Image (tube, rainbow over all chains, first blue to last red; front, side):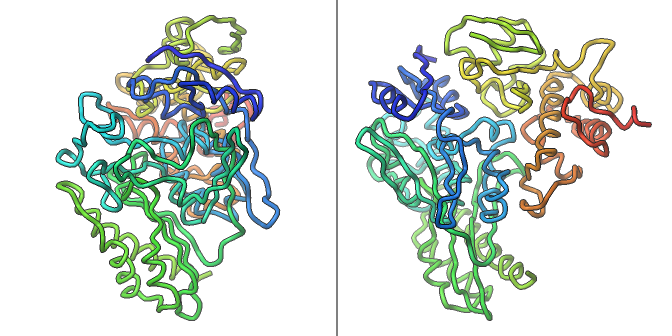
Length: 328
Length: 182
């Protein structure tokens, strides 16, 4: 690990001033950043500890909820208001990592965690994300965990977060602060596709700090976070589905679907949602909508199974949600 | 920098790159917490910070100034075992013992989480008032602690025997075990 200086920010302004220094990086729980520093993939000169800032979960005024970026993942998952009004978010957080890591990790840090692509971590490998312009060894290599949607010839990495997939389905908004003030970015736009610049992963500008995530007012219908992985617990998603479904008299009034494990960002399934809206809540319709979403998917040597798996998990999740709403 | 480690106030000086695990092992010679994977995957380094379980290998020690750190050495000692340590012995909750300090610290943190109403991924309804420590809940909640000897059944039995039916107390040290109650 390269040497760095450690600064604890006393308030937001102090954080932004410290964060404006060359080579500065904000530090949350450190569960991903410390590991990346140890692997010398990240080498900040200054670490600005922001864990003491933005640590509250508050009513947003219009029936929504504002979650400070410094709140620990466990605290979000255990919050009574989140569990009652946004159970999907609790479920997604609890599907990720281990209890120890959730106790350390912050909400802001969760959004900014980096891919676990093995070639990104291996500094003997070619990786456009780690070293722009060097190529991508994953495309011809072991790519079972990699992206099938929205990938490019420069990068096929996936975003590892579960929490962010639920936030995408919930239409959450990310608030960031910089020296020029605050701005709100819809979560679905916050992360970007790799294109030719996979080292750019979010809309954040240099020195900007995530301060909060706001959830819009409550959901109608039923919701669930479903994660399919290589073992029952503590593994990254092969496919995950965050879904909210409202069915009335056999007709889909609203469907919101986001996918994890398939792309460089949490993937909002807009095509499937459009196909489902005002249509019949039947398994055949769910399957057709899932096919519509995956029509542009492209498999690599080891991960083509994800294309069919994603469709099956989407379909099965919607069938379950329909049944769940009927019995409630 | 100031820490409270196993009830003792200590002032320590160290490079900011030092992990909490290295601080405990190299500077305080507390060798209970182990460096297994050093990347948060195995849980052998689990300690309690202000009663909450964390992976000390991923923790920069500098972030935990002024905190109360509890390691396995602070829970029990030879001849005066913590009830959960005694239960691990009784139920063969280990073979080589390498993961055991992390397992025990983790289980104590887990019981506190359960008491605070933290749900898990296998909880039927995350909005429920409280959660029962079924074997399935226990295994999910302990999934951040690997045991390469595969002593999982014994670990589950030891934790259930200690915490399964008893109402957890605030202080982990005074938790009654089923054995004591009987």
